Amino acid sequence: MAGKKSTQNRNMIIYIAIYFFTWLSGLVAFLLAKGDKSMRFHGLQSIVLGIVIVVLSFLPFIGIISLLFWLYGIYVGYEAGKGNDINMPIIGKLVKPYA
Image 1 (spheres, rainbow, N blue to C red):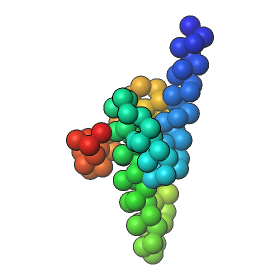
Image 2 (image 1 turned 180 degrees about the vertical axis):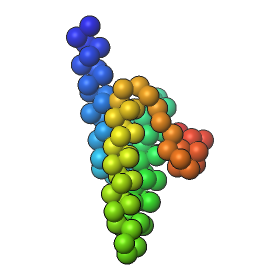
Image 3 (image 1 turned 90 degrees about the vertical axis):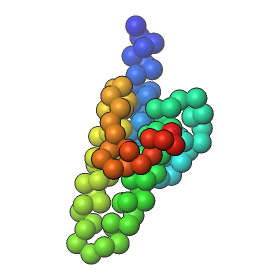
């Protein structure tokens, strides 16, 4: 039982980190998780989310929205760590075929 709890905690940390560092950690996860479709999916989703955040952060008065997107990404990572895969609107459909 302790091993399963440890694995869940490790997965939660990994998935949260994927979204915390957005495109950089998403790229690492996508490239290193060859056999794990869920990890590859969330890596791609994080890469696209990171690109969206960077683009939005350059627009005046939209910076707060990019912060909210980043926080939503961390929430998605938290849920993925618990085993609940969440498809982000638009981004999830865009990356699903490539995961």
